[in-house]
Image (spheres, rainbow, N blue to C red):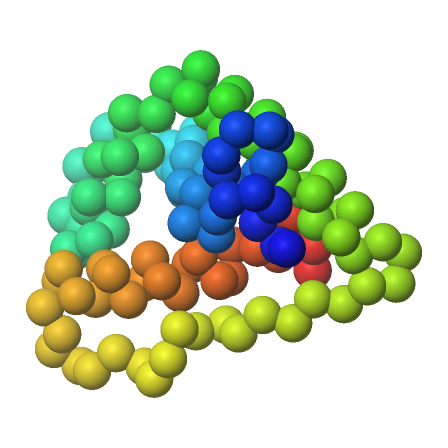
Length: 128
């Protein structure tokens, strides 16, 4: 299976939800390293969702990033082993119809999380 043993004992790589968590830490760390000085200096007024994601990114420690990078390497190796030299992986890019305009922020964030659980697979595995 794509996610290994579902995250239990025995060295599996976990569920897509766990993969998304690893992706979030890695991505947020990189974003903060790139834009953190600017955010702290300029104090931009981000909209809902973006503001919270930058706040989360600011709090990621080097140790958390290192742990996520190790998990990302394990996930990438797992996907490489599944695909071999000529495998193909087809994954939907969205969990369903587009969210409605005006959707409350919490519902939009839940939709976004569901989408990213699907789209993070290629990124976290180092694939196109």
